[in-house]
Image (cartoon, rainbow, N blue to C red):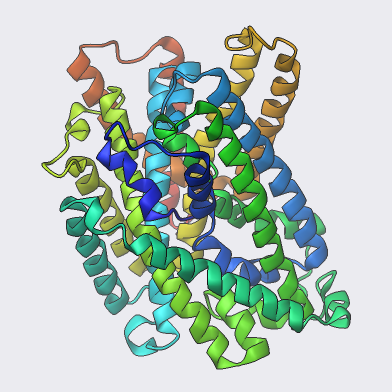
Length: 488
C-alpha cells in the first residue's frame, strides 16, 4: 500500500491540461500496491504457513483481487460519468448513506494505513536505535512520528509541486531493494530447504491448513490496497478505457513481485527462522543469507519508500474527503482549497486522525500487525460495495446497450468479487469487524452535518436499518473494549 507522489499530484492541481496517459495510470496502480506491505510478506507468511499454504493463499487472493480489478475495469467503461469511483459507485448503487459509509471507510482505511507507515518507520529504526524506538510504539517513536506527520502536513499545505521531486527517489528506493532481494533469493535458492519448508517444516504450529491460509489473508488484502488507484483519479485520465487497462496491467505486474517475495525466502532458510526475524521481515530474511548489509540495504529502502508513500497517501486521504465534499456526501467544509489549491481542511482532519491513532499505539500489544489488519478490514467495505454495484449494473443493463452479451459474464465476475470480500471479512474475524463499526458509527455525524446543509432527508427506511445495525455493532465493540474482551 503506497502511491507515487507525482501521480497523486493532479488530484490537487486540477488544471485541465493535467491529464494522465495509460503509462501514468499504470504506474499509479503499481506504485499504489508496491509499498510497505511487500516488505513484510516473508515474516507474516512464514509465521502462518509454509509454501503450500502460501500458494493456496495467493491463488485465493489473486483470483479475488483479479475479479475485483475486472469489476473496476468494467465500471470505468460502462459508467464513464462516475468519477472517484471507489465511493461514487457505492452511492450510485446503494444510496446516499451507504455511499457516505464507503467514502468514510475508504478515507479511514487510508488514515490507518498512514499510521502503519509510521509504525513501520519506527520499527525499522528500532533495529538500529532500540533505546529510542523500541518496537515502534515507545514514547520516542511516537514523538518522532508525530513530528514527521506534521512536517509533511505543512509541506503539502505550501503546495504539492514543491514535494513531487521525492517521487523519483521513492520509486528507485522501493523497486531496487525488492529486485536485489529477489535476485539474492534466486541465487541462494536451495531446493532441499524449500522441500523441508513446504508443509511448514520444523516447529510448525499445530493448526489446520485452513487456519494457516486464513492467517495470511489480511496481509494479502493490505498489499493489494491501491488496486483502485487508477479509479480514484479516473477524472484525470486521457481516455476512460485507460482506467480499466491500467488496473489490470498494474495488478498482473505487482502480483508477480509479491508472490516471488513470499515464496523465495522459503528456499533459503528454515521457516521458523524467517518467522522470527524483526520487522520489516524482508530485511531480516535477506540478512539471513547475505549478512547485516542486507538488512541495512532493505531498511534504507523501506525508510525512503515509506516516507514517500506517506506523502502520496496523505494526498489521497485529502482527495477522498475533498471529492466527497464536492459531491455533498461530506460537509462542504471539506470542499475548500487554500491559495495553493490544496484541500486544506480535508488535510487537517486526516492528519489529526492519524496523530490520534499514532498516540493510541502506545497501548497496543502489537501495533504493527494491528494497524495493518485494521487498514485491511476497513478497506474491505468499499471493495464489497463496488463489487455489489457491479452486479446491480450488469443486471440493469445500463451501459451495456452496445454489448448486451457481456452482462452475464460481468455478473459472474462481480459475484466472485463479492464472495471474496465476504470471505475476507470472515477471515478477519469478529473482533476486527466490530472495531470497524466502532470507527464508522461516530463518523455518521459528518453525514448528519452534510444532510443538514442540504436540507435533505436523513435516512430512507433501508438506510435507517443500516444505521441501526451499525450502532448495534459499535455498542458491542465498545463493550468488548471496555471489558477487555477485545484488545487492540
